[in-house]
Length: 556
Image 1: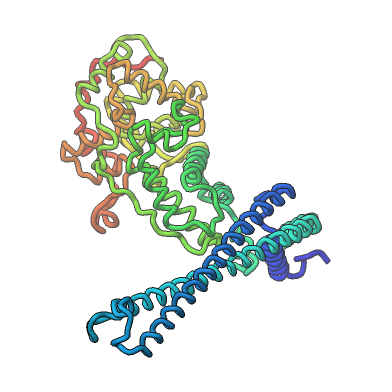
Image 2: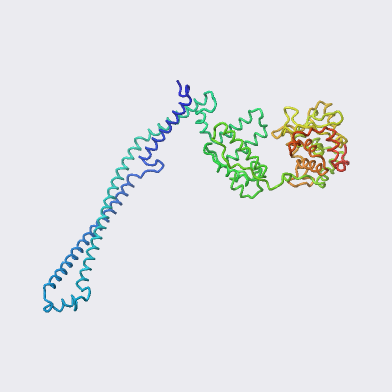
């Protein structure tokens, strides 16, 4: 029976217990034999060091013995002097004062009770010398004992070197074999357990999951998001992978269970410093994040930072729900924008619109590509997003009962939608009809063409990539070079002009595919407007006929 076949929980428990026992054994052997990372001293080096220590101890020992002898001689001399003084004191006490010699009288003092005599002073000095010498003798004895301990330590060090060398030579091969066996049995048990059917979050799942690294979580999360019903489209998948790779680059790849709130704080702080297009600009390649920040380029917008934060939060919440991490760490607070919401992109001014449409390309018979001619005009009169227009099929422009209209959104499997509100119907403005849009679409249908702009093929970003490059070049050629003015500025222009004309905001939101923001009545009890209402109460307020009246009808 293979290990883990019957009980994956017991198999993993046994594997981890064996690994822990092995690590403890290795640690015990390392403590006996020394750290293997530090190379041991050679025999010659150790003998030189040992001889040097012995010479030092012998020199200090000889000096201390000589000091002890000197102290002993001093103590003997002081004792003899002290005894002589005591003998002189006894002789003085037995003699009569009258027959006392003059020298002794001088020594004892001329008058009784005069104070300490010279003899007393001499006795005190001799006593002090004896006490000092006794202290010196005690100090020398302490130093001798210390030298004895050092000598004993030298002997023990020598014996330890010999013993550890023998142990290292004897057990080196056994240690390596034991470590290899522990790794093999652990990986085998985990592999066996992972093949068993999962029923909830068992203990085996928790133990195996605890070993995942952040990079493994990113791969598993992306695989999951691409396999669900609401799967990522290719563009979103690539973008999410790049942004999660940036997260790994900032916080570092580590075991998921070690991820903490301080790592989230580090991620947000660094993210707010980085510029946009980090993976696209050649000047950032080969540079560390610190070097990129030091270039001083404009940082990411608050909206982009918050998008990245939400993506990482989704990953961590997904990992927590599957017990890969204990809980979602804190610290992923959204960044407040210093700009107003409408300042992300600027609307076109009248001068910008004149520069874009009052050109030879629009006002002469010279014809450019159909998409470069029509998409800006449709954007001007519908406020639609660039990919919503670029992916239009011929059957997406339909004849209503009274009003022809655009059917924007995901009407076919190979089309994309941004959100649920993106699926909408917008009337075809009469100016577009005058300029020949319906005739152009009919001509395409007559030849069996499905797409309104057949030159725009679908890529990772939808159908608009080719057009975006051409329009950006055309915009700059016309003198509209502000970085905040892109094709999306047509959408801002459309909304701004209608709001300035006091058009009901519910009509504006319905035509642009925005959700109605406000109170519950606005969101739940406002009925959709008819196409006639959108045309007469909405599009009729656009002041663009004077701008486009000199544009010649399109000829295919």
